[in-house]
Structure formats: C-alpha cells, structure tokens
Image (cartoon, rainbow, N blue to C red; front, side, top):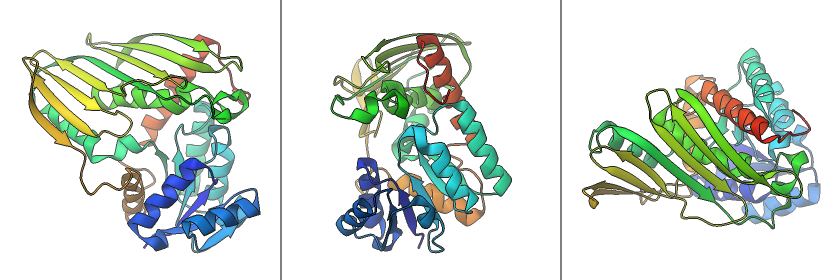
Length: 323
C-alpha cells in the first residue's frame, strides 16, 4: 500500500488527507508544515502516522512513497524539487508552477533524476471526464463546433488568491479548469486567442473571459472568477445535438440533448469518494510501471497549459515576481 506524505497543511491538503484515509488509512502517512505545531495538529485531526516541522524531514523519510505538494503555486518549484532531489515521486497541485519556465525546470530535473511527477489537475483523471470524450467520439451530437465553460467561486476571504507574490488570481486557481476542459475536448490547435480580465486592488485578475478560435473553425468561450458564483456548467455544441456538463471542476452529471430534449444521462460513479482518488490511483499505476509521467496528464500538456497561461497574463499585463 502506497504511503503519501503531504507538504503543506492548508484546506486542499485536508481534502487529500480525507481522500487518502477513505482509500486506505495507512495511505495518509505523513504531513509536513513549516510550523511543527500546525503539522502535529493536522496529524492528530487526520490521523497521520508522522508529522514534520520541515519539508526536508518529510522527503527524507524512507517510508514515504509519494509526495503531494499542496503549497501555493509560488512555492511548487522549490518544494517539488526538494522531493525529486530526494528521489521521491511527486503529485504537484495545479497550477503546476508559477510559469512555464519553472515548469520546464522542474520537469527537466525530474527527467534527469528519473523520478515520476504529475500535475494534480483532478479533472484530467476522472472517469466522468473520459465519459464526455467517449460521448463526443460516439457521434451522437455530430460535429462539435462550440464549447462553453464557466467556473466561478466567491473567494474574497482567501488572502492567498489576492496576493500577487503567491501567484494569486482567478486564472491560476480557477481559470485553469476551463482551459483544461477546452483542451481535453477541442485539443490545442488554436489559431487565435482573444481575452480580457478585470484586476483587483492587488493587481491580480479577479474575473477573466477567454475566447479560443481553432484552425478548423471551432470556438471555445471560457470564463472564470474568484469573486462571484456561476452555474459551473460546460456546454459542447454539435450539428446534431449538444452535451451539458454539471460542474466542469468535478463533473456530476452529463446530459446529451437532441432537438432540445434529453436523450441520455450519465452520473458520476456512486463509488466516488472525493474525486481526488483518481489522481492518486494514476500515481500508483505509473510508479508501479516505472513511468515518469501519467498518461492522463502528460508532461507536454502541463507545459502547454502553463505557456497558455503565461501568454494570457502577458496580454493582461499581469506579472508575478518570479516571471
């Protein structure tokens, strides 16, 4: 049974700890925080076998089989690098790094050391995401022409999301999901990008709107925000029908429509725990097979998404300290 060590003790780390315990209690093995007291409190709450007051101690633990990096985007490069240098496979939260240059540096290090790493963009690993692709490829909606995806959360009380030094903003935390949604189903053959954003007082994007025009004439319209709510829906329109997806972040239901009437529905697996389990299972499979990347989220896709976000931020005049 794989033992996971978590770097960072925030909310997303708690969700991973809950997932690991539900998969198998022994998988939720270790937690590390820069504050030893916080690490101990986390370990007590989530029943981790070990707690550490430094990240170095965690990656040096011989019992750790996989390191989950759950710190802010701004710190993914040093923290994931620490694990790789120790020979530990890594599951690194999205967005993968602060920018594409850091992503290249991290992936190059992983390849040089022969260590597995993948991005924890959970939608890439979900059975429901694969079902959407199957439905499109079945031809039931004909030829797809338009894709819409929106994801918005009211996150004004999350200081990290509004801190430019921590790579805050709607794009990196929320907009990365619509971008991945479009890539999964419309690919990457983009001819033109038109976008805009509204910045908050700290200089990060609080709302953004992105239109992608593909070389074959298809179009994707994407929106994200960190300051309001939306229906979180995805829509893929073909010449014979369309598909609606409830919650593109964690697909709950897929409905196929023809003549504006539902003709098929697919629900998320009843056995699903939190949705995080699929990325953990992908890591287990890859490590068992000696792979350096996960087939569901190849390194090239991670790099391409980071470059895409770099380009969007450049167009908006949004720079992070590490750019």
